[in-house]
Length: 475
Ligand SMILES: Cc1cc2nc3c(=O)[nH]c(=O)nc-3n(C[C@H](O)[C@H](O)[C@H](O)COP(=O)(O)OP(=O)(O)OC[C@H]3O[C@@H](n4cnc5c(N)ncnc54)[C@H](O)[C@@H]3O)c2cc1C
Image 1 (cartoon, rainbow, N blue to C red):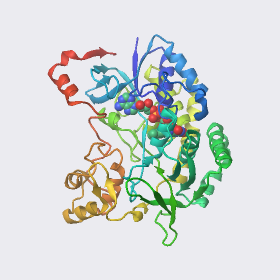
Image 2 (cartoon, rainbow, N blue to C red):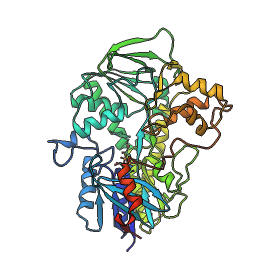
Image 3 (cartoon, helix red, strand yellow):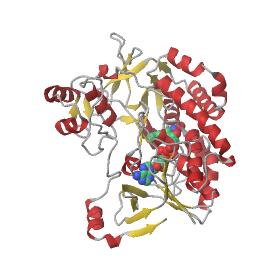
Image 4 (cartoon, helix red, strand yellow):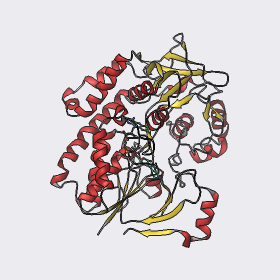
């Protein structure tokens, strides 16, 4: 019997697992989290269940039925707390156990069919003062609200761009914060222009539209101000956040002089979209397209034979697109084809939600002049404390044109997060010094051969004593 190995048990991975099982394959489903569900269905652990988990979720019944189906299936092995930390020559290296625990199980899987469904990181642009305690990524605040029921502050501002700001504000309110405003960088005219064209297309994505209308009505109910064409352009505080500066910005996101307003808050949540989590597909050799997502064909096949990709790593499109792509990837990985009759509804949904995703990008994509709110002192790489002024002076003095040399000279992106937070911003800011606006050595900040933290002891044990590994050949 064929085995399909799936990395990531978010919406895409769960749908892939269900489809692969329906296609007759055995499934091994790995996820580094304590439970399945991914970012969209992040929830309290079974040991501390919520009275009404569906309160913070959309599509909760879809999740429950997927989970029950897979958990009750003896030919679907679900391994949680399974941290895939490297892929080499098709060997998938995994440490199984609590992230901070000792004695984690080292395993190596090697499967003929692999579905990558590792999702995304949330992206935050650097802002003066963003290194202060009390500044959260929108996704981080959302994860604390959904996964721990923790409110990040009492008076909170949410700023950035994209529809994701709406569920974040809603979760903050449910967790107990007062949201004093949501500041969306896009201008009302751009939003209206994008969201009202071709309404028949929107009508075909009713689930997402209903979800968004639900957030809007909750905003109205909780009287949360939603202001467009404004950005959080500075954050102030002695030891932690005390206030934020919000400015009107032009269509390129450059702040407009004289429009600054200070708002007293004790926390701020920033979200400027998402970047795909590409370490593992890149390590597996999958081609990345010009938009910097994993290239897939109609069957969700990547450029590497036997490796499929689904969900946010192929394009930021939300839960419905992730479910449709996952179902197709799992079905084909088990031996079917996307053109098979039973895949019809998934093909249709994939097409519709790709259009929806393109609409989000066109309504909320990052403006080219966001760096105008930076000062020379603004920290860009927080791990290595590299400022905007230092990035510029090194780029000018060295005249280097490649990311590799500029990273070594500035140390930006070389710290503990390995550029997960600042990588894309560093690339853009350094690219401004190069003719054509793009660094030219072809190096990408998305390449991280060690995908998740691993203790030196665990690494040494694996190198010294390969027999210690539980070798699982799932071919
Ligand atoms: C922090 C954050 C919060 C979000 N919250 C929301 C929300 O509330 N509402 C909303 O509409 N959208 C939200 N999104 C967008 C969301 O990612 C998608 O809508 C949807 O969850 C995408 O599904 P997916 O299966 O592609 O990815 P995900 O749901 O992200 O699932 C990917 C899974 O892969 C696992 N994984 C990744 N790397 C490894 C590894 N090395 N080893 C093992 N497992 C790994 C992760 O643990 C995760 O469970 C959020 C995104 C982020 C980054």
